[in-house]
Image (tube, rainbow, N blue to C red; front, top):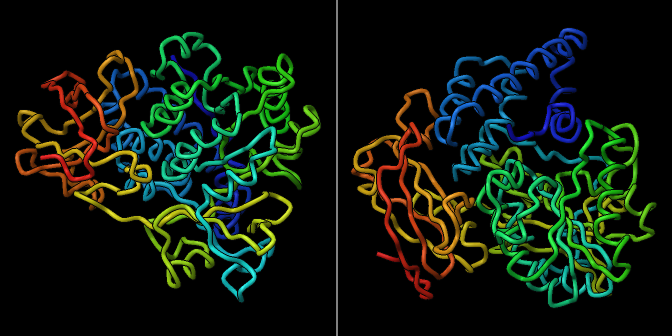
Length: 452
């Protein structure tokens, strides 16, 4: 069975604010008991689902469990698990609805870069490339349930390779997948979050560009500070110990890259790394100034940015002397604001990855009236075990599902888009029992016009 994160290692970074907010009403002791029970139940359901072959039937088990229990503690904790699987299936709107971290204003926040004329808006890719020129390490963070937070990292890999970066390290990768580089693409044994196609594209892109791809997750059962330290030591040993001139790009979750303050009762991976490697990484925070399905959850600065000038791509704020703005000065070197959600044919348009991919329309007839139906596109030349370049699900018909899911009612009325780079692909449609019902080969042209 593939390992998976436990509640113990994600709760402090993800849910602490929500847990504290609810604890007053529920009573601290009672709420803690509810958390423990919910965590145990969530882990049990996940393990039960993983015994079933295929993401779609796993998701149906998980969704049914979520609908059946509306308890606050359970929804809060299991909603994270559900959101991961929804992102794996390309149901990104639903992933954000199942679990989302509200970004309220905080006393730690720096003054808004929109006040006055001290800061200008600049494409984030240009800012990062400039700041990374003489850096040995660049750390990006992500929100595991919001795949949009992976898009800038994918886009930056070619530019960072041109600057001389040699290694790419991802927290989610399993060191047990020793054939990843030889194979050239991730499969389900490569990592946990790499089951999501944009994350897989990140790893695939790094391999294609010639990065040495390394795993650095703690192999022990360490949690908290001990886990952070083990991650940092793995990163140093697998990148710099044998190659002092190496330069690394790191993708990590949430506050693993925070550079100051207490984290999980100790220090973050980035803080431990700086002490072990004697390298001060460039830290890029991109999980706070992001869109949510409900604007009330957006950070006040983000709402102000959308009201003033909605960005069409990831942006940074830069002073006249080139200094980048950070929402949490001293904790991260710069903060990135991501573009708001827009939709095209039912899917979020950021899946174009800045225009490097284009929508290819797939008619629901490929599913041969089987509902629900999972549609996946894999690169010609990669095996059937490859994490697809893109996937989505149509025909979800459970009346208890959310509105955005419920619109996918009848396959014969459906058309959906897969977001793909120019090239040749093998498209596969499979049903709720994971049985393949149809396959076809397609070619995506270089034109940005929608394919028929």
